[in-house]
Image 1 (cartoon, rainbow, N blue to C red):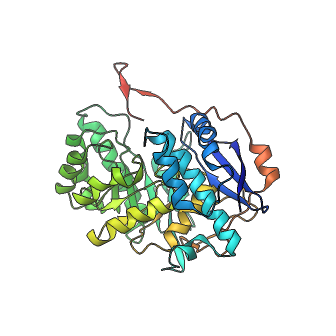
Image 2 (cartoon, helix red, strand yellow):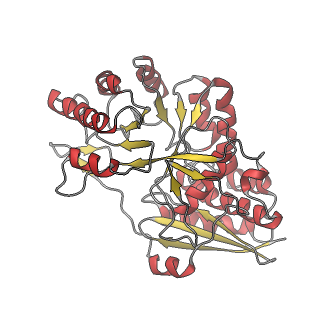
Image 3 (cartoon, rainbow, N blue to C red):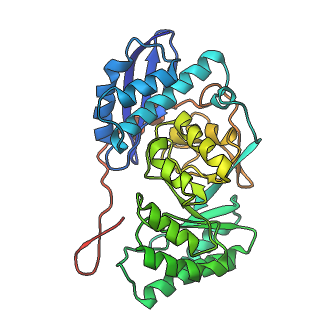
Length: 372
């Protein structure tokens, strides 16, 4: 079995799918989306292609090492996102060639269904309370994530702080205590503000606070974590096990959030989860991406003992022949071969675009740059 060529396609709203073709007719699917940089990732894929053409796609670890180490310069979100998409597709090929799902190749399932969480956003003209009631009306979820933190100064006014806390309070009152709430700070706060906010949010018992400070500030994460009883989650903007090593060794967070389209792929995320398991750290994969990335994440979730909850923004109605189905806040473990999905070619063609998606840019009142 040999790789013959790689095909890429950008689809709306911002996703980069790839297909790896082999000489037996099997096609492996992957997603190499890097928000705002997917066209750059596509170039990286073309640069990796000579390392892959003619190779046996079943030598996944060997090809990963070759792609990661073989260009002299290592790491970074562009390279590892490209590698992630390729790696997902290689596992899809291997699973399809053997007629088994990827999770079977990684040790088999440890659960029968996978918990996922939804998002709550206020629509135009909608109050926050109305948004919460709409999301929770007949809800199919047992957990939601919200992003109540605006573009923030180093120290914010009491009015801003109180408004953030009030939003969480409103959701908790409407949801009751049977629904989990996760609060995404998105790295917009200083460590000092994150600590102040965490103390105000403690009465509402969030499932976790995500990215209270920017990635790379391990000491800052530890400082916030030691100041609150709320579990801290981070890792969506970290790549490979090497960048996660410090968080794990120093127990800087309670929950790791590798993104399988950035971190290096399925097996790389599995290695990270395994390193975290002896330290009683959970894994909640980051995935505000497309259905192929979600399918890869579900394969990991199915066989990972310390899995917590899965992020998603689509169940695949937009591009999959058979979308995932949600019941009581859970998705059944995929049982099909490989990633367990097939793209609907007509929908993919209808959703094709040039890949030009711009990261939102925020400013503070004085015109200075603010974290998105």
